[in-house]
Amino acid sequence: MPLLLLCRWPRLRRVLICAAILSFVAALALVLIDHNVTRAAHERIHTEVSSVPERSVGVVLGTTKHLRSGKLNVYYRERVRTAAELFHAGKVRGLLVSGDNSRVEYNEPEDMRQDLIKAGVPEDCITLDYAGFRTLDSVVRAREVFGQNGFVVVTQKFHAERAVYLAQSHGIDAVGCVATDAIGIYRVRVRLREVLARAKAWLDVNVLGTRPKFLGPKEQVSLR
Image (tube, rainbow, N blue to C red):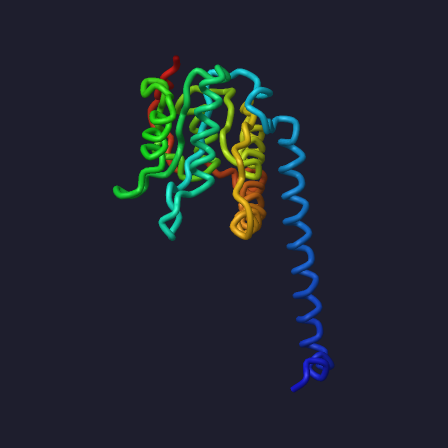
């Protein structure tokens, strides 16, 4: 039956109109939240290492080292490179690598530690946070477990904006140091997922009051 004929049915027409309105409102909310996160973090995001204010610690946000295809993940590679550059430039005196180690065979912090050492960062200046399951966990644990109320977040721009937004929402003085982004369709897919991630971050902060999955005892960050 043609759609126009179906729409003549009053009940179905009302359902379609309501669905259209709800879809529009949801899309508008996603756009506004995305813009709000970018705006809130704008003045704290640095695209050059030379412009980053000095802090004791750089928090490197973890990601998988290899894609499903087996290729090296450009996001991983550039975070490691930028973190090492930040350290060698004297902008931070230690690196806190925060990532997922929820499975025996998967260890983001350890992978990054090994590659940071290869990049010339002394082993005793690298501290690992194995419970950085989400960006919120990494940011809040940096303060509540590792005692850092001000730090540099190292990740790609879209991610750094969300991390800084979460930090500000929890009263943490964080700035972002931007690692090079991917290019092409992969970048587009990641950016689209980021819109949803920002909506979740907004809900965590403003509605749900979400806390990290684990906190645990206080730990020291190793510094140069």
